[in-house]
Amino acid sequence: MKKFWKKRWVYRILALILAILLFTYVNSDRMNTVNVNSGENGNNTALMANKTKTLTVPLELDVNNSKYLVSGYPSKVKIKITGPSALVTTTTNTQNFKAYVSLRKLGVGKHKVQIKEEGLNKELSYSFDPETINITIANRRTKTFAIQTEVNQDAIAKGYESKAAILRSQTVTATGSVSEINRIAQVVAKVNLPNNTKQDVTTQVLLQAVDNRGDTVNVILDPQTVNVTVPVQKNSDTSSSSSSSGSQASSTSDEAENSRTNRTANSSSSSSSSSSSSSSKNSSSTKSSSVSTSSSSSSSEN
Image (spheres, rainbow, N blue to C red):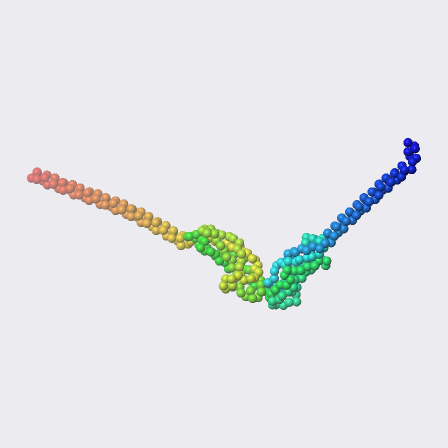
């Protein structure tokens, strides 16, 4: 055994084996490092890749609301944003920006304005759909109107009638452009009663501002609804007719009773008369008999 380790080729083989093991270890470590770096680079590439997303956002107006009224604009617009994937995703989730139109320097009339953004990250590019809108600016006016009621009388049951409707609020405030406010003829609360109504109805009704032709006027009403009570009761003519019928029946009954009473009285009177007549006749017969007897006596004496 000692002779075996004293041979040179044994050490040469061992050295070769160790060299191979060392080479294998170094290469495997290098490969792992390359794979890790490749994965990190891939993730970074994914995060830095561009992404496009289309969002729908509210459109805000930069205007003096106390003086002007704006019409003709959409309530929402679409915006397409493009940029790094992570930034686009964050913006989509938070929507920490706004779309608006600036009207501060514009006066009364029709205008074409461009939609702008505020708060969007500078690394993102964007485009609006539509890019511009047409709007109308008018002077703002507020006016108070009395509320009128309309009730569908044909829904009330036969023999019943409705009285004047009772409103919780008697007036309403209308806000709009001067031209629209001037169109208003009245503000109406239209009450739709259920069919065959026989009792009071209380309901909440939507108010409508209408012109002389009955068309709805584009204004803002405050309040927008009102509580209405419609009293319903039996028709007074029907009640009077029933009372009259009752009185006539009572009168007829009284007359019949009086007739029966009169007939009874007349019958009693007739009976009394007959009795008196019989008594008189009997009395006369008695008197005649007495006279005859008296005459006979006188004759006998003679």
